Amino acid sequence: MHSEDLRQELARAARSFQERGWMLGTAGNLSARVSDAAFWITASGRPKELLTLDDFVSVNLQGEVLAAPADRKPSAETAIHRVIYGHVPEARVIFHVHSIEANLCGHFARNGQLRLPPLEMLKGLGVPDAEPEVDLPVFANHHNVARIAEDMDAAFAQSLPRVPGALIHQHGVTAWGQDLLTARHHLELLEYCFRYLVQAKTIGVQV
Ligand SMILES: CSCCC(=O)C(=O)COP(=O)(O)O
Ligand SMILES: [Zn+2]
Image (cartoon, rainbow, N blue to C red; front, side, top):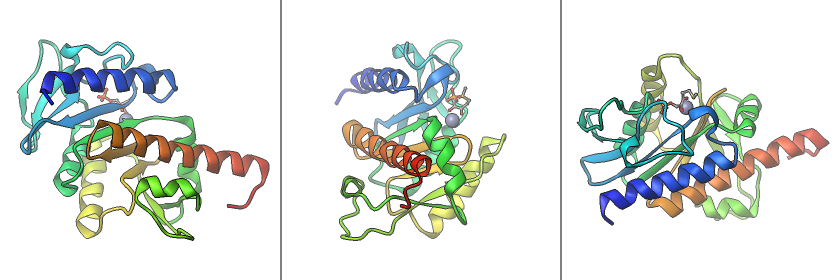
């Protein structure tokens, strides 16, 4: 796929996530690898429902800006995308969004792990088990994004998450996939799990 098309597809995804309430007030960031060495990432602070080709910055895996439109800086959370691309070779697209449910679910985590509900839909996250016991890693939020990226780097060097995502407490989820559609499905499935967990808690269902 031509790299310009990738930016248009990322902009379309951002608009739909914003309409779902996951990218309000410029929150979140999206990226896609254009080669083994470089990726497009959303420019920092841009309204995610109005992204144009000028709202993307080309960055290499060392974090150096290769190309940026005037007055555009790469997402403040670029380091997190770099860590994921560095550790997960099959990750070609990364979506980071801020939903209310994800932020509530951070409070259900124990020892840095959120147990996902044992739903059939986990198959879409690559978990075929009959009775799945699967955790999503939850990282502490830090004002200094580099610290979040360092924590993630250290954790992923030990072991990769079983599902293609990670939650940052009081911040939002990041999901990835081998292409745009797969990353989108992974994000939707994780957000479905978050909604399920919040609603189960609300009506007193033990998960
Ligand atoms: C208003 S959201 C605060 C920053 C953040 O968490 C985020 O996802 C957006 O940062 P960016 O620099 O990518 O716009
Ligand atoms: Zn964020």
